Length: 291
Image (cartoon, rainbow, N blue to C red):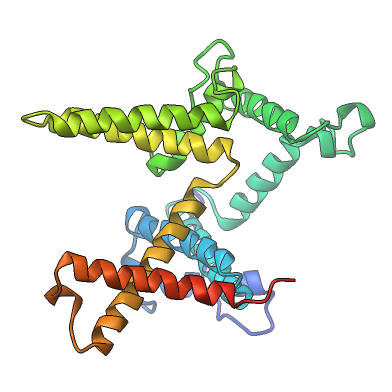
């Protein structure tokens, strides 16, 4: 078992990545480090890793580049944290993680680097991104030892957010031709699935399991719709969340200015505030110059 490198004092003149690695070593020291950092494990840190990835996306959505720089640093810290824990247990170190991804990128891009890492010739270059995606998947299947005769859906992880997994399942099925030809028929399928939800809601008594299944079908088709419309499902939902939050906060501010609280109002009065918030938002957008 490889022993982890001993801690050194992080110095300002160190290369930045070496300094970060040494900071993590010091934080994880069971005697002189930070008690919180020292007691963490892979499972306890995993939720923070997911959270930091989403905060990177949020900064990108807001086009906040100073914030993006900070959030990327937070995400890098997660990689360093996991790598240090693995090194302490004798599995791998940060350098192994970097080396592995370098090797993978070269191996999976023979159209750029050639089959042995050299520059690719014209015959190896690809025509478009679709061809690249097909070749990437083929190389990945070989690397993972997946039988070419196995299911096209093999190898899709179960730990993904469900909407991400839905998109991956759909893309794999589409790779063998099982897909809608374009976006318009998907709208018809969505209407069909919504009608089935309506039918379930009208049943007496309602069957919670059947209703869950039918609503799941609606959500699955929404992912199909976004994919065919070339819209990122996560981005669309994130923007819907931000819009709802913005308008609801505006409603609360309006109610407060009128000397009342949202929770003290009937639904029809709340709806009027919602309509005002939408109208104010539209006026603000219309006032923005367009060039």
